[in-house]
Image 1 (cartoon, rainbow, N blue to C red):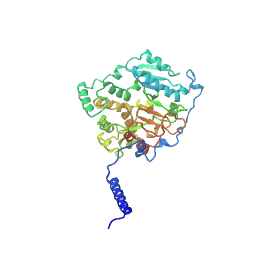
Image 2: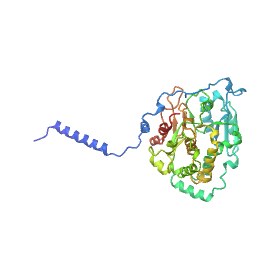
Image 3: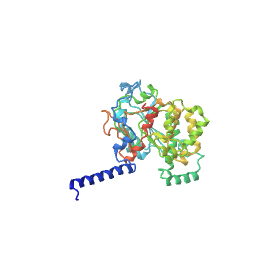
Image 4: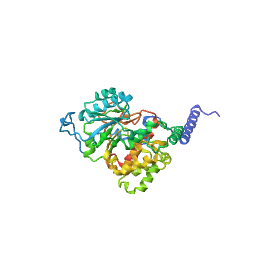
Length: 394
């Protein structure tokens, strides 16, 4: 007996639905598709919530912040940039953004560092971008040159191995020198001898939000040591022995660990267990140090000096590719009170390919809550959830 057409259609639909159901159960875990998938890291990205100024004491602009003010409210702080002469236009672009959103109100000086003398073109263009004082400093050779205990043959061999593993800049000696200088030498420059706070600014970055309080005074008045905007996972291939060397240091200096440290953030093995394994116990979470506002008293402390010297003698700035971001971050996570580390969620910032873009009427030019405009898989690199989990939002 023939089956009625409507019934046949119903049977076909049922089979199709059953096959779709089985596929949904058995299909592989999907990769990230687009910006919406950033919520794999969050129940809700906190940058989507309305953002105001931080709690605590805030000091506003006044005539006492005029460039030529004698009795000034500025404290001993500077905007700091390590930059090459050929990067002048990108540096000016960054300056224009930060002057427009913040420094035109407070006129903190700029201090530029280079391992080569600055050209007159560089000085002319950068000084024209601000009403504040500009200082142009040459890095001493003993701070920049490869230290005597680094073996060139071992460096060449190690760099070749790193390059085969896909590590960027592995053979670029100047990159290794830069990471070492940013980690433990910049604050020893004579030009910074009487300077306590700095805000690091790099060429080709962007600032999106008007900031109407003195950021340096916020750090000082509220007893903050370090401020960040972006918090990421690092590439474990660049630093396989950094954590083992840190463990050695802790074994020799057990009192260095702060009682309110962020040790769990430094060593988390839940979110990205493969990173922890490859980095031999380090989560690879780090503050992205192309933006950092910090109190150099921390770097100048005996604990940090001893830690940096231990790492420096171990050779990993050259034989591996230890960056200043993980070195700074591990030190802060272990040796400092985590409550003194502040997320500047209200400062809109971009360093390609990542953003910090808060939900604020003071921000223009970035998409609220967007972490990256790069490939969708980059959303997995966000380590803010772990910081908020273990240390709070600052």
